[in-house]
Image 1 (cartoon, rainbow over the protein chains, first blue to last red):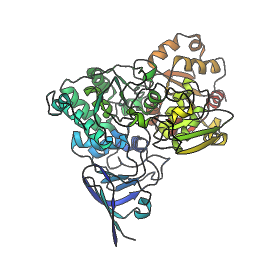
Image 2 (cartoon, chains in turn purple, brown):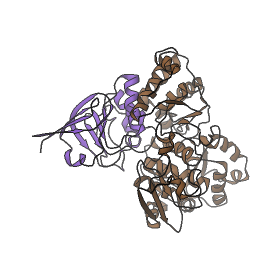
Image 3 (cartoon, helix red, strand yellow):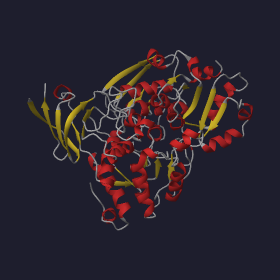
Image 4 (tube, helix red, strand yellow):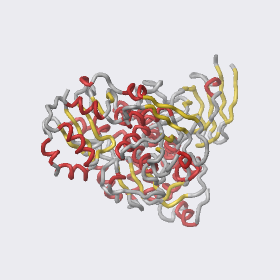
Length: 151
Length: 384
């Protein structure tokens, strides 16, 4: 096992550790979680966006790594909802944080004390260093990302 | 972030728990983007207009706000209703619609119920600071009207509406409003919506500057909505057309573009369905149609033998105006329905296979089983 550490920019405080789920495609969370089937308990965080590479995957309990979020201003509300219902990822690492993504976690923190940590890491080597299934820890206070590679 | 004494008092709870939390939300949100201060806004536009049980957290926050009797502090408009009354299934899916409407009224929200709030009820001036949600309205107000708003989420919009502030970052600042990517067009048959869709897919988090083309106001509206759905663009410029791009030099604030992309006719054509026959329903009006836009469509389909169901989704006031026109009176009511709801929400909850054709890039992106056609394709399909 190889352990490596990356320094990102801490955006939303907190700590999360678990299996990485990596996407190289920007995510439209409103399209992903806006389907009627996302109202079913246990299925709330399934990406039901046919345009996306993680189509049909449940992101609950993973550390999600992705380039950016796109699309509707429902984004913050649908992210808040999965955090509120405890079906959210454990943490998020994003290459480019935008206001909609951050809104979800900040709203969850201020109104329900359940916001997940978010760290921004912009460099492209992210995808060479982290693969889906690696165990990854994200520290939203100091921005450190620790990767345990199991290949 | 610098907090003035009034804001500090609010954070400490002088005006109640809810206002304090709303302001705390804006401070934390702005701090992530290095906002230096909170600035007063002229208006807000809310996107949270669908009364579904799926958004429990949203309702929970609304209830907390109303319990303290808090109302919006600035003129605030709201997105369309979701078509809660068009079928039994929709009534079930949007069972909380009446409750939501009541809450919005108690908050003091202007009941415009349209995503095209900038056409009526909430018309910003160039340079106004706003806190709007609804991606299509944000991109229109920034790009076409020269007002200044970030792409705010549902609930961030509400925190701004009840406090009257937004954090100063992003599109509120001059330095983030100039273009970074030049878009060249090699197109002989313009389709602004498809162009917007492809720009949205290719450019994420940048400000595109499109070379001069004589787009209409409707073109700009539909192009922006497609960009914002297929991507995350909140501001674009068109050389010589939009207010902050009198010429290419101004649009890029004197700098060179970071990159240049070229969009060709074949890029646009690749979005278009080849099977106009596949659809059973043709939808126009995402974003909502004005009276003129609906009249233009009606002019093409009136008197024709229609083979498909057709939805025209309109701003409520525009619908009233449209219903007084001769176009409306001659429409074949057995095929054409004129609504004020959001076609995306109304159709998303329907279970049957969606055989929908639309000229909306936004609806095409979000609604599973939808095909895209140019306005001409869609008009042709109505009688095919």
